[in-house]
Image: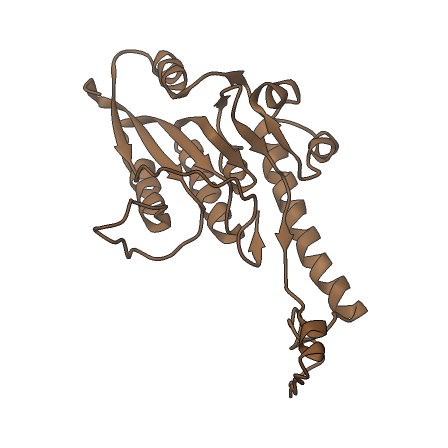
Length: 254
């Protein structure tokens, strides 16, 4: 939207599963989540003194731990640079989609938005029994007892299970801290709502994860009012028709 070029709002689209697949985009396929584009956009926002506010347009089930944490890092830097950040949640802003929304000064969601899913999941598959039924044997030669951790060809040992669970717990503690810091909640308050379940928008307002109900036009109007004047609205990122409701992706996701 046109307006005062010295007072801008940067809309950043975070749509789709948040996994960095590089900058390769097919000219024949719909635009997908582009992590590098989002990071470069945030860097530009931080450096541009004319940008007074950031509007996150989030429609994501989450994705990689690294990607979520990297976006969060630059959003925190944007706040430290004096930018006002609002997040508008679309159909879904769950797990990593909520992680990146947590630092926002105001979070908007519709009644139909699926959000929350605060947690971390790490998965592996075990087809040992199937292999035995088919008469297939696996021979592994490892340099250490833990090198075969998360192998699909054997049951995890007690030591492996404890180690992997410790990794998950550590990443979850980081997630809880991010939400507590962003929402001004205690860690106990966050943990009470962070058992992995998803919430509809109204429930998320009631439990403190969302500030108010509204759509992106409502968030835009509210951010304009807070900034004052007639700010210009510019847009970064690709739109994506996202329909999946999967809450996890790959081996390591939030």
